[in-house]
Image 1 (cartoon, one colour):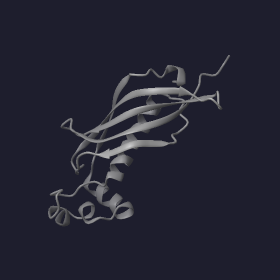
Image 2: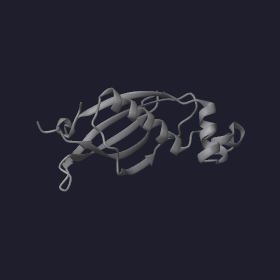
Image 3: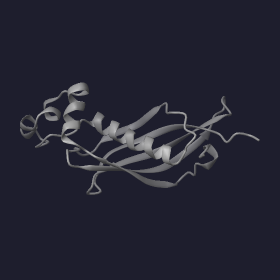
Image 4: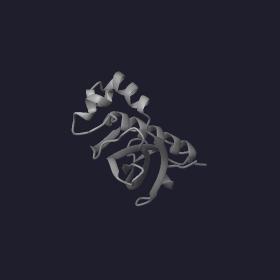
Length: 149
């Protein structure tokens, strides 16, 4: 189990692989971001995207799927997150892309009021199969401290 005490500021990790599928892009867009360039190849072709692109919110959701798989694989004593900062969508994500994540721990802080937990901030970079960054954000994670005894 990975606890707060095991988080090393400055450490980096790469993980995940998510294939972006055409039907998934359209299904997500229909439910959550029904803009024409997320719904139709023809409509998208007439925009600056040039072709169907995934919603930025879909890119966030695909990233979250990779993050959760990574946390499970490392058996982290995670307690969720109060949010993210500095979210940026840098480049379009297209069906046929394969996404992956790189992260760096920026800092960590023990809770003043809850000694059983701490928090850490990490910079997340999501890249496509060409190693082009498509999204970045700073994540704030809550994590248990190592049990005493």
